[in-house]
Length: 279
Image (cartoon, rainbow, N blue to C red; front, side):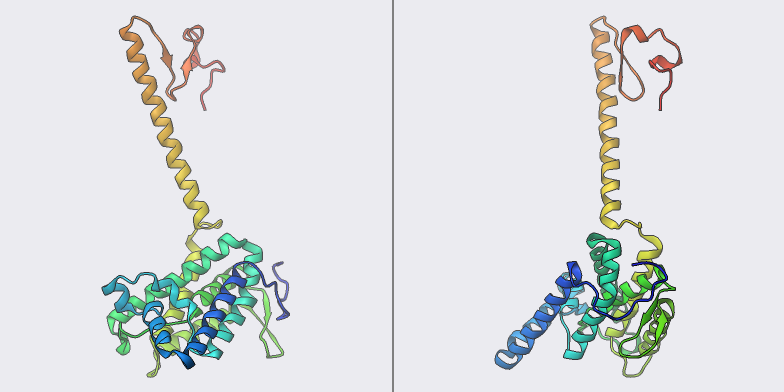
């Protein structure tokens, strides 16, 4: 995707994590529809175990719900428009970012939206109840949209089925205002705060997290710590070996990095290094 190029709502690539999420959410919804006719208790059980119920997470340890709620949807229009938006926005982001960074951002926004929902439910703000369930991938998708608007704000997008385009940053701004207004509506539901949470965590992802993703940053931190540990072990072993050889009336020398200095180099200047420099 090139910055400044207008995105038309032709069919984007249907592959990678976008394809997996869409097929999973659609399959689960169809399964619920079928079970709703023949075994309604199965649908009730799925709602109890997979929907985001703040009280179940905080009081009964059902922590998996902060992710699984995004796989359930309440109606055909709910799943249809969510998956349509995920396809159009997610496909371009996944192509630009790669699969790993895309799924990290999406999961980050899904979990972030869940955490905001849980926190707000326990404040009882506007009558919110922690026993109320939330379903849908909207939090993760709006987080992706926020990231898209921040990174490609001047990108023009056609609004299907409307016959005009709008810049991504303005579309994100409209959605943010709409989500805030909806949160204060008398009939507003707790799921609205998942939308706000997704937008917030999409902003945080772009603003504060490493550009190459969480797993890359974690691996870099891991290898940095591991290498520091190995360097410490080498220096420690060198000091112990010096003491051991000294007890046997023999002298060996190591530099500050634990590297052995041959006897012929001990008399050289500049720290005993063959080159005279230590990086």
